Length: 63
Image (cartoon, rainbow, N blue to C red):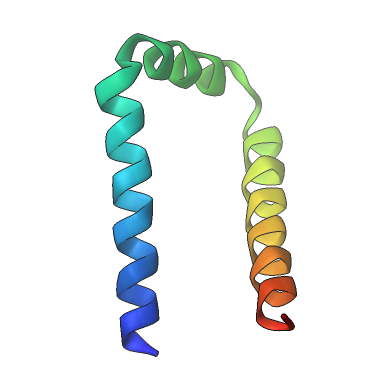
């Protein structure tokens, strides 16, 4: 169980590191766009992303 969590965190760090290494200016523009969004919209995006990730893991576990 703990190995799975550590693997997941490592993959997140790899993906975020690639984004910062390959497209730092794009990330800056994306952060500016996020700041312009209302708080409720950002919260909705976060909850939607969370639900999508949980659903994907649930589906993958069934295979």
